[in-house]
Length: 609
Ligand code: OXD
Ligand code: MN
Figure 1 (cartoon, rainbow, N blue to C red):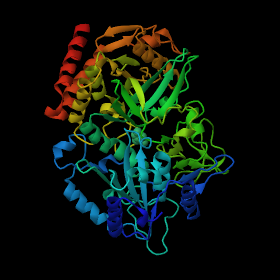
Figure 2: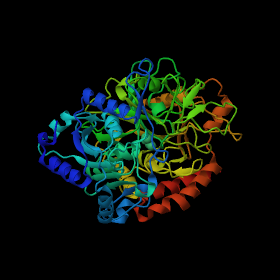
Figure 3: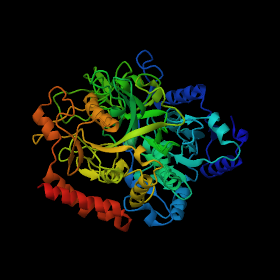
């Protein structure tokens, strides 16, 4: 398909304008066919940009390596360029949109020289769902095109839906490295220096401009940029929720199912929870999505969720037969691996895969690497944020209804993070506003998914949306309060929970085994929704009685008491931190309902002392 076949005049004009600015050697429209995907992958293999994996062990799979500086999202270079600074709020970087566009236009000038420009029409969400949205990404990266073909629904079917004048979100991307005559990419994908990287969202005009990075979260613009940052703005204006949440279905032995969404900061095990294999006999978990949920009220007053994505962009290290066999199977064919290690027989390996490195590897830098088991200082063979991009339908756990255009009705919403102390294994909010309060105070130990935050410290990450909210976070809190206020059937609103799988003893040992054993907590959540759970009212919310959750092997009654204790002093410190460091950031945008909730929590804790 060529440019002249584009029926949408506005789209054709935009593509022509960008081509005039960026001066690519050729323009290709992504038609979504497997022939085109295969040809593009083959080109990257032939040019040395990717390595084809052993077809016996990993059929249809390739490995890409990035520039060592281009391995994660860059929050410092991510901008919400609203007209007024206040509308970006205290948690986002802001640049005046006119100034930012001028700077970026200069960078884009001639930036695709020597490269092909790809035009990718894509749908976030099942084609034609009333909750889905269409975007068009222009990019000069074949890696991006192939990843988008897995992560979203791409091609001519989307153009057909768009018709001659349909609405789409324009998404512009360049790796920011033109090629001179005869020059090539030297086996790693190219990128621009840090000071030239920009991941920009323009919320008023609903545009995305990304420059200088090829990394997924910065370059696959349907994901974090559209499905979260721009979608939060659309959701605010249209009365729905765009959230950093997995969606799972849990089924009890009687065959009754409930849908649960869960928001955890990056790299806190969302993919593992979404694909969990329950350890409780007779219970089942199925996956609807592992990263993003879009939720809208249905006519019956329930919140219905869709997964806007079509694939998993999962963190590889730590993924093993024990931790997540479903992910391993999903990524066993037709998968793009990024920055993992390569074995001699052209298979992949990473730290935490569940077995020792087989012989001599090529690490994520492209150098020889032999495991030195006694050496704790040995740099990893796979980058800690190395990834697999796998089609969602390949997960054995995928729910048959995962692409249902009307979505699935949500019974429970979980919030959580990595908190070694204070926060109990699980508690439930008293009502919607209390649940919004719990979402607003989420905090987590920092991990490797973002480049520019210090690992090991705890940062507040409200709703796990800190890097993903496209407008003022105080207004976003208010939007959540308003969703509760305007619920067509208040008793059909999901119940809200706060979970913490990451409690440690004072000598640093895990108190809770996590993974499949988390099904025991999900069972209690299910029972709360069904009205059959054993509960106790506490100063922090509604909690399970100590015998309400079946204990996994190795967890003693004493451990369980600790996991479910209300640490009054710890919570009072939490309250003080929220009062002095967290909530003041939002100034007069902080909803009064949340300020009141903090006062109530403090007085309940003081009364319990
Ligand atoms: C992700 C992230 O990659 O949250 O999903 O960083
Ligand atoms: Mn994520």
